[in-house]
Image (cartoon, rainbow, N blue to C red):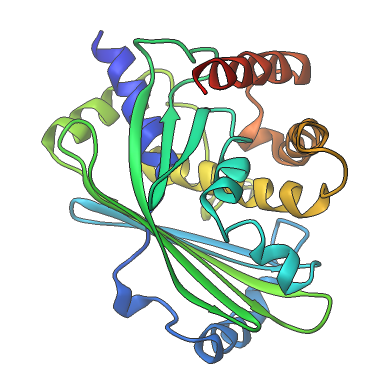
Length: 290
């Protein structure tokens, strides 16, 4: 039972991303683009093969991080992924650990848990308030917050921000953070000592004796894996825009899985057929509750 809840908790913490304190966030389109200029070296020279920067850190009982990326899509295409609760749910649902997402009055309701566990007992429901702070030509900023979570966790916050680079490209920022408590830390330590002990993130924290990169592990590694999954969900959402809603969803599921396989060392969990079968079960459960 302890291991089951430690696994679930770590997934919830990573899935329910939040953002650092407001003072650390770009507050305007000009500041966001200034951040892009500051990150030019990292955006151009990294292991991802695309203009992407991921950073994470732990500050006492709080874990936080930021993702910055340049996308080959027009601002209106990128912004469309976060303008409504329905749009946000379509994006979040692509993640293998999200079993349901439903728009609610003023926010979204997310059901998260380990893969192949969409039924009762191994999932948890999180309710997020959603607020659009800026929706102006060339700049969108959306914030999702939840005051509490499972096992003494609190102060969840997720920020999405996008600004137009030019007519065909956009610069995006994800900010995320949450507070943990004693029960949460104990549960995560159990998970990281068992099922999660061999998993790695993306940040390089050193080199081994042969000069090969050593990647971050533990809580930060888990957070980085999941924020990458959401970044890839945004790419899939932007790439697959034609057809009926059902056709778009199926195309996005396949595209998301293919994108994650480019980073198999961090993100591979199971095969495409298993992923699609689980998502079909999740979609059927959501449809039955409507």
